[in-house]
Length: 382
Image (cartoon, rainbow, N blue to C red; front, side, top):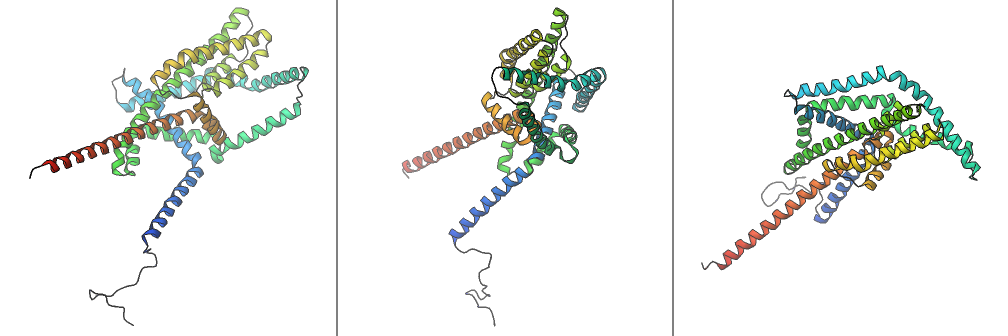
């Protein structure tokens, strides 16, 4: 049987089984496909979120190295590659020095640290029971072990099968590759975007890098200040009373490292410092409280405001909420990267709002010019 012949003399084929003839149905099918794609991308992002966080950590590390290289460029007129090598060599040299000259002392103190904290916690709970609080040590230990188990599960997920060391190594390796050729990866991401959005992407990426460098510089200044000032204050107690505060070096290092995490880090370091202080008596414990308050007040009212003027200013409640969410989802790594991630989200939203305002102004100007042309044509006597 031959195919029907159309008006133009050619064979007329029937409708394709994959073609939707109704415009309304085509619109609904396209909308369903769009939503399915969005949901699929969200599910994929959740599934690979841990890997994405590692990549973002590598970006933060690359920003630290790049910021150091830019600072060196102000005093050393050498190539960027040499400046990056100097920064990386300096970081490695610092870690080697720390392990050689302070490693044995800090490792010994770190081994004694859990015992001191446990003894002080028992003393605190005993005092609370004397005051009438119904606290069972078995219940406290069970809660602590459950919390440690859940915390370990979250943090182990970040490191995969080989643990957190692998995560750290991956962050460093990816960060070094990125900092060596940042434009290569920037062009690669821009290539995947529509041409109309590439200029906006380059502007946003540049502002993000600028903000991240200043944010990381501020964090490093705060970390160094808190660590050094805490160590000097703890040593000062021994010079005045002759009784040395135990683990002064370890407490100073922990205070400096935890200063990278605003709000929560200061609270954790303060609790640890006070617990160790009361292990040497009430006088030493009260002095550690004074040290903690002095460090946090000077840092909070002098150092941080000065840094915030030069960096991104984030609302404290928003930062704390982001830290809680990232800490629950991703453990320690999420807690450390919550602040930089929030800053990058803020920059992206600000740049998008600026681009949208510019587009609206262009549309208004185009409409005004079109209205003016129409008015001229209507008033033309011809």
